[in-house]
Image 1 (cartoon, one colour):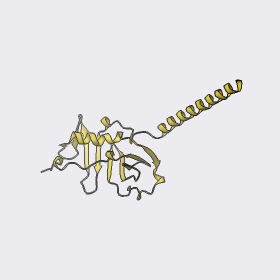
Image 2: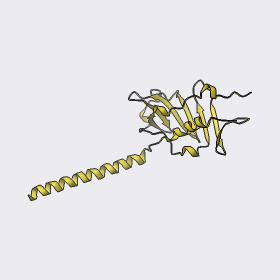
Image 3: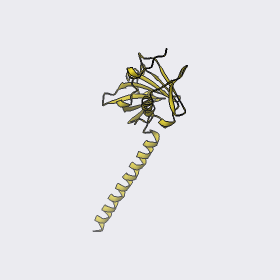
Image 4: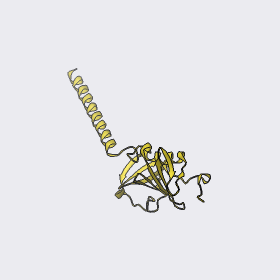
Length: 164
């Protein structure tokens, strides 16, 4: 009976050690790779620039809690669209890897489908992943995989305001 008790105790200690090690690894990974694209609060962002191939570059600034198209004279912007664009900063990053692990041309980063700058932090959106509805996004010297829904889209045609 003593031998059985010692074996159970040893098994419990091994399982507890594995659980502690797994918890430590999970916390370490979470600290090393944030779960969002940028450590910015979307509500605190004050400048947005969006470049999409085939479209003019859009520039917006926030003044007194409202978004304006940057230019002379400033034109009121679509608040919902800007909320979507700034919300991309908080998009869930499912995986992070160094940019050096990739050939930028193979994942669409030499000619990105969109380049979004939020308060001087640039996100370059590449191709979609072959493994699911995910897109490669370059953030500095790292690449994240994010849900494809986090890709900036061009403005709706009726939302484009032409200047006289």
